[in-house]
Length: 612
Figure 1: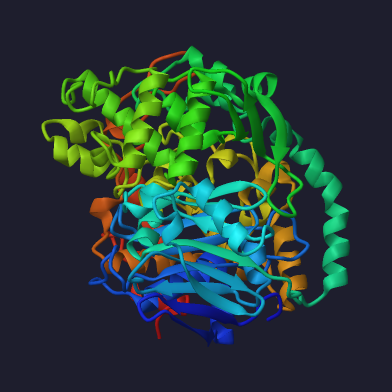
Figure 2: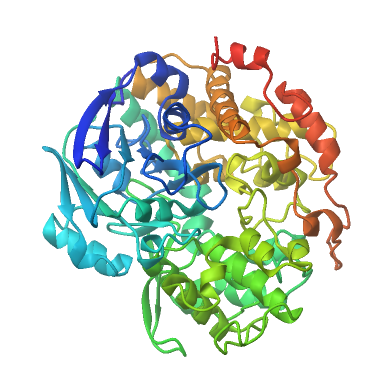
């Protein structure tokens, strides 16, 4: 198999040593790389006794066979560990430039274990790895820390780094990656895992050439598609990921008022179109990505001071804005900037603040708890203040930093009724009452309420993928066939996450599944077809499920929060239908060949080669 090095770098921070491990060829063919091999390695190196914030919890980063090739939109990697937020599989996917620079040092993956006795950072380059002192930047934010690390290594490096939130082991802490742009591995609290290891940063830069099976053929094939990719994604390029907010609010797919609201005029003020027309001054792209969905914004004057840098993406606007009813772009941009500086997941941060606003409204929280901050809906001032409190672990921020599930348990009374999460993870900004495949995927996704596990809602809205049996957009509320529909996209996107390639290449059929498999064969020298690719995706998805069932996950955990199952929204073009989760789950388990309790059957595990 070409396109990979066949080896991983293993670092033990306790002993401050490192070694190289070879990966068996069969494992590459079964799991490819990225999310696949990362999950497999985590499964093999942990058990139900492994503590999320203990030294034995491996932090694993893995690239894929597409990383560093000519295939567009593939400068991504996957990071996994046991999540301190949820206690189950923690995983996050991030773009930028770190993956390419790391792979060019000669490794496919990185496994970090142990705990250093003082703050350190890793410097990985062509000649190996160095474990260096990070004490001068402990306590600094991610931007300051990355700048310091680059001065100590090379300005060409990309730095994955934690801010104060990760250092303090805040359960919703992420890992910003700072190179020519800023991208964050935000979900499931893996920044806290870095903090628990006394690991401040991992800087990478390499120049080694990555060999693929048919470099000329791959380059020629990719070039033939670039014009189509540019045309299909031009709206994303112009307005970013938040360009469709107006429409999503109209059809009921946008989160409003902690998922309680139905209609909100404020959505127009914070959309990608509004950003484009007011504060956008440029676009940013991950390495080798023609889509360039990243936003570069500038605000000269605001109550929060001047700002210039990374603008918020759709999910950040949905949670920091829509869920909190904040229609002030400047406040959202400031909160987004602070999340990057402190190293916080914008989705969990915005969602938990929205939960706190509702708790304040219901009298479960008062200004005594918030250090005087009035947690009213729509208050940009309160939003920014709460992000500061979470990042600094002050006041109510100590509780907010544990996520909405643990915060609800601490508040007691009826707080659990309006705490919106699945398996402890707050949902991204897509409403499962609008797309039933999204409801089913939220319930069954390995890390919790994750839209990216299936990314099926665009295919219930307007898109198709005939190669996997979806010839026309699916009916969002049709129950019959929903299990196959949802599982197919979960499997397909597990294959994508093993390669690793961005979801947005699917927009407008810029890149089809057939294109992706063909490029995979040209890169690796293997001879996959779509069915084989889907089998790999199913193997990865099923392995993740086995990881979680080992930790006690079953049908009891696969449901949605009460708000999604009981609250009808009112308004023109809004459905009053609610997802029938029990029927959806029964159909889904049957299709997957899992038991009624949601455990993969032995026959299914044998057929996928997961067990003998």
